[in-house]
Length: 108
Image (tube, rainbow, N blue to C red):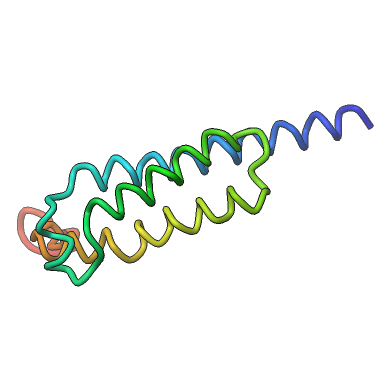
């Protein structure tokens, strides 16, 4: 029975670290974006997204050992919204969305 509990704790820590890495990636990506790209993409301001992703990172760090809490889920959703909605829109506006797996002689 002890090994099952240890396995559950290990899985929880690995999941917590992975979720924190996602939240940290969202924050770092948000920091690297130009402030004028956010309104141009039809999204909220950079300052608001920095606050949202920053709070998500703090919550993710504090909840690394218990990743299945309501606060961690809210933080993951916030970072996920940034990564799935805001980041692609920013890449379209800034011109970094044109990657289409082209080789030197055309697409493959």
